[in-house]
Amino acid sequence: MELQNDNLQDFFIKMDEALAVNETLKTSLSLAVDALLKVCGETEKQLEIIRDWTSSEAGDVTLDNGVIIPNATKILEELRTKTQEVLDTIPPTLQGYKEEFKVKIDELIATKTQEIESLKNDLQNKVNENIAKHDEAITEDREAYETLKADLEARIQEIEAQAFLNEFKVFKESVNQTIASLSAEVAKLDITSINETINQKDSQNVKLTGNQSISDVKTFTTPPISATNPSANNQVANKA
Image 1 (cartoon, rainbow, N blue to C red):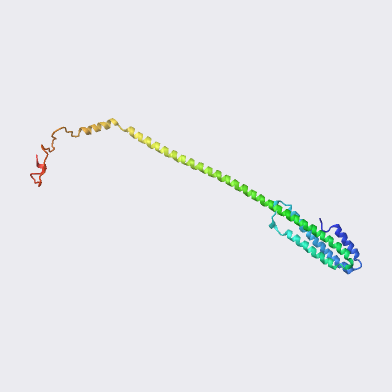
Image 2 (cartoon, one colour):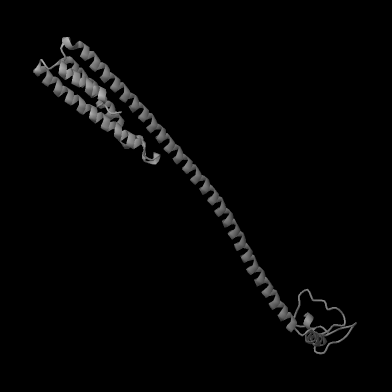
């Protein structure tokens, strides 16, 4: 809805005709009306910015992008103030026009105020939707991370288990090689030769049965008794 609508323009034309008798007042009102229309145009421009802004993708809309809505509201307040200034210049003889003018301006301000509130609500809804989408994306990312983490932990356990098995296989192979080496050494031993050597050593030992004399070995017919005070003649070694 354009603020410079046909009804308002028609009203200004009527006012110009009614004030034709007073050129000074007509000039003053004309300047005031021009200023009023300029403010109306700025308000419409601000609203158009809001429309374009809120029609963009929700991901591009945040409440921190600017102060467009506060600016539009401020311009409407300026419009109300400017309207009152114009109304104050209208003489009592034109009270009917004054009331009609005020009603039309109030209607326009009310309409635009409602539109601003509606756009503000739309903007807030888009922001909320955007936040919800981000929260959902974060939740999905977190779930994906947890899944990936679980997969990696399972894979690590598999790798550790495989590493243990590999180490065990190496150890087992080492033990088998040691056993094989020992078996080979044992196989090389000549048991017959060992027995012959043992028998040969055994035959070289002195074996006594009963009272036997051994060549070059001192023997006694009776157990020798050592003297209390042994001397050169009565030592055990000298006894027969």
